[in-house]
Image (cartoon, rainbow, N blue to C red):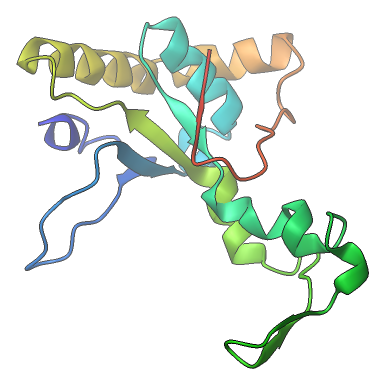
Length: 166
């Protein structure tokens, strides 16, 4: 219902469910295209959704490779490269910036809604109304972002799955 209700908002692409597959995830994830949203940052977009009373968050999945364990600065740094005797493979840390697509995903993916199993269609309708309101008022968000020095503000998370936005 939520995805159908916001299907006309071109800067939000909900997580795709392939033909023959069933949705089994409990949160609603999507990709945000700031270029289609008048270059309003994901930070400002989530801030606006939160101000409308929605539970939303950023996703850190795209940034797992910059966690200390993987970038070589954590407790195992002296042992890099890592060797797995069970798999018979050697692993070298991957510096940030070398997985550009993964980082781009981490900068554009967001949790568009929480689990709805304890609420009815009325709550989903409130989400649809809030997304629609924001989509129809992007010019105001552009001005808000500029006036508050948020044009370059990025969400900072390092890999936790959901970072609730308040």
